[in-house]
Length: 141
Image 1: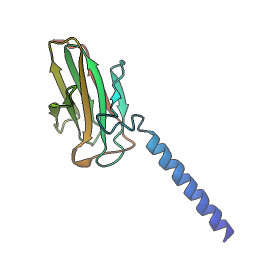
Image 2 (image 1 turned 120 degrees about the vertical axis):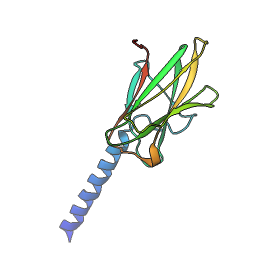
Image 3 (image 1 turned 30 degrees about the horizontal axis):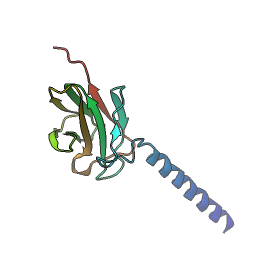
Image 4 (image 1 turned 90 degrees about the horizontal axis):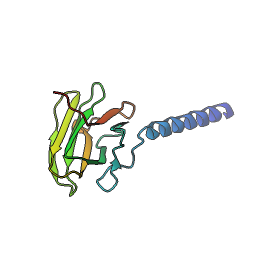
C-alpha cells in the first residue's frame, strides 16, 4: 500500500509540473482583451501560443503611416488575424485558410496605434505549437 501511495504522489506531482510548464509557454498571458493587450516589441516579431479553445491574444502596436502585419499559424492549424484602431473599432481581418495571414493599414498620420487579435478558427489551438506575429517594415517591389 505504501509503495502505491508514493507512486501516486510522484505521478500527481509530475503531472502538475508538466501542466505548469505547458501553461508557462504562453509568455503573453494574460493578453485576452484590449485592456490587457501586450505591446508588440520593437524587434518587429514575436512568438506565442493559443493555449485553449477560445483563447484570444491581443497586441498593441504603434506604427508609422503604414502598418502591415503578418501572422504565421503553426503547421496544421488555422489562426486568424484581426486589426482594430486605437478606439478598438474593427478595421479589417485576414481569415484565409493559408499558413500566412496579413492585415495592413495606411494613414496620413505619422503615429498610429493599432490593436491586433490572434484567434484560432473554430476554436483551434495547440499549447505546444507557437504562432509568429511579425511587423513588416520594408516592402520590396
